[in-house]
Length: 346
Image 1 (spheres, rainbow, N blue to C red):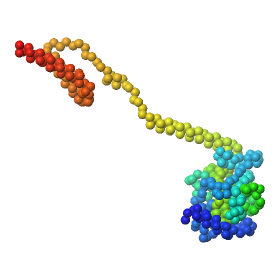
Image 2: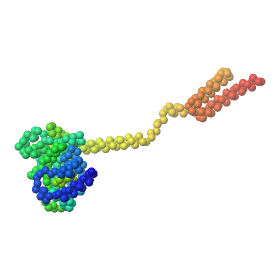
Image 3: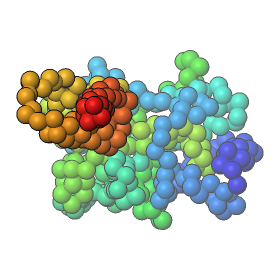
């Protein structure tokens, strides 16, 4: 079935089955058995998940206020779309979406899911779990979230583990409140409980957080992605990665210009420079005055030159160019032989 048709059918099911008291429930959001096979590939925690940003019909997006940075515990790089923050430090993220359009569809009880994934394609299908060292340090905390790297400060957060993909995610239910504008805004406090350098967990591999706006039935209405690095010096690491990205961009531009120049040079026909050999071939030479003692030797010399020039002209396909010289030799030979015949007759 087409994905767009599945989404529309699921939206209609949500409109019909939405319970006004659903916001009081704390159970994990689930998908009905009849509709699960319809959009299994669209599940936000499945083995194959969507990672591309899309605002959806409700213009879902998030915002980080840099003025709230306290003692440089976290930094946000707009160029890289990446958060650099220290472990176990709270970072506030403000989500917003169009409120009235969701009201028209009867969707009051929405939720926001945060899912950690590896940024590189070769590790994207792996689940991300907290390292054993940090698990032991927090052994007295809630067992539902002890293996999760991403924690949420909201009291009714739901920590989930997908049984098929074993992906960990945290879900925050949006409680009804009257919006001050046409956009609904909701602030959520997150913190990360492992470092990017933990060898038995992230192992210095880049990670992303996928935020999805969902219905209580698990239907994805919008998706946004942001990079994350958990480190001890957020400001230093952010400046370092921005400089590295700038260098890569400059090198890419240089390589592009170089390849473009090579292509244009190959398309332009090159003129071969004239060599000294070409000049010598086209140059004319004159034989010095040569006295031949007898008429017989003179005739033999003329015949030899005539045969040589004629054969060379035929081989080099230069018969037309050499014709005057060959004709002159032939005339000289005929003239000398005719003189000899006249002398014998007399």
